[in-house]
Length: 334
Image 1 (cartoon, rainbow, N blue to C red):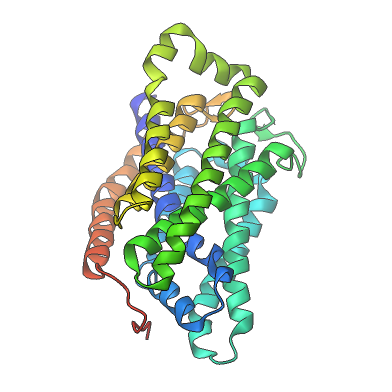
Image 2 (cartoon, one colour):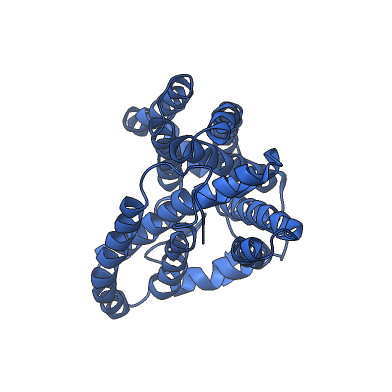
């Protein structure tokens, strides 16, 4: 097997997941913050800030899941049964979120149930993603290339904490996005909320950073052997720096940089998780080479991705550029 093909696909899938987390994270975060105001105009402004982007953001979730199925079918066959319940819960919640986004506008003034569905669907989807994240960190029982655990192995105190942490992190992304994209009371309230959410996210990051090495010797060995420690110490330091910069910029007139540094926190945390688990795709036993598809499958799909990925990136950049600027209170979705 060409050793580099699984590496390329692992990078592609990791990039797709990271783009999904950031891009869909802030619109899920806006929905999580929805109950913090009862003003109808402010809620409309919050939704309008993500109206041109939200459905396209989920493209990256499809690419990540589809890429896993094609490039690492054995991993897909183990990971899916291990997390059937939280994954199905996430998908159903995303459906409710999407339906609520559209139906809320046409149901006015009788749209209270769609406001609830928008908030609840987004919050449950974020929490379910945290459960899967925590379960992946803890590891999956696999024997003979099959899932060997129980249907609720993912339900632990650590995964519940990760679920809360992801909800908090997405809410921070949503708050800093509102600081960047809106004006008036919505932006001012979001700036205050972002400070509290930043504290929550950084506390969560510290707890995970302490918990995982103590609970999993393989992670402790990766981070704390002398040679690795010299190479990897900048990652927690840069994460702390990004957190400091978010706090500092929220105290000033800055609008875009709090959002940018929040993305930096997510990116560094994601890289930290990748470093902790590489080369295991099904931790703690199966590497990307153990669960990879045939090289011919990798090459065949990679040819298609090499054409489609630049188109998706161009379209995404075009949409964000087209709808740049502030969303005012009188902006409309339809």
